[in-house]
Amino acid sequence: MEYIYFMAPILTFAMTASITPGPNNIILSTNAVNYGFKATIPLMLGVFFGFLSVLTLCLLGIGEIYENYPNFKNFIKIVATIFLTYLAYKIFISTKFSDNNKKRRFTFRDIYFFQLINPKAVSVSMSSSAIFIQNKFSYLEEFILIFICFIISTSTSAVVWAAIGHSFRKYLNDKRKIIYFNRVMALLLLGCVFYIIL
Image (cartoon, rainbow, N blue to C red; front, side):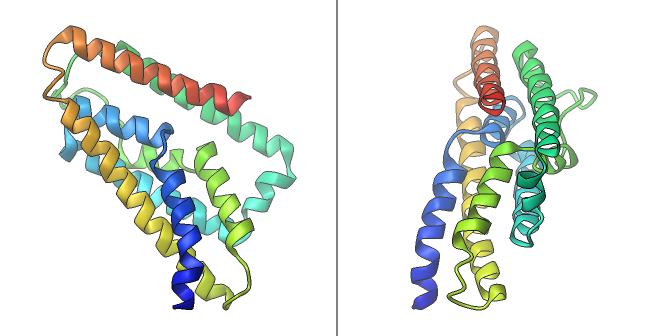
């Protein structure tokens, strides 16, 4: 029962952080619109394993490097800004659904390694390690409980956003609608870039 009381606020925080719009959710939704739910599964797994890797590093104390070395933090922000701007551009110029296997798509590896520079993922992971390690139980127990909460929230969020994107696919049945959708999503992604810069 004590574990449930410990996990309840963490799971609430994790679900709120995961389900709200951010780079990962925009990428998953847009990919699902353009390529379908099944083709988005590798990206969902990239988000899942990538974020949990970042969380693990932060729970082990590596996140302090990010906070204690401003130049490193700024470098991460610059790389993330460049990546997201490039991604927003690719989405913005996309004009149709594509089943062309020759077209370069984002892969599990792309999205996995993006998590290492994703400011939202890093911030959420660092906040979790700072707030929720409370020494109520052993360090290992708290580590596992926090990890379980984020397994639930990250997997749920990824599936929900990909499903939302896939459900829009049948309504975007002409080129003009697809262009509008992609451009709106690209602008939302650029909004994430401004959030990083500010």
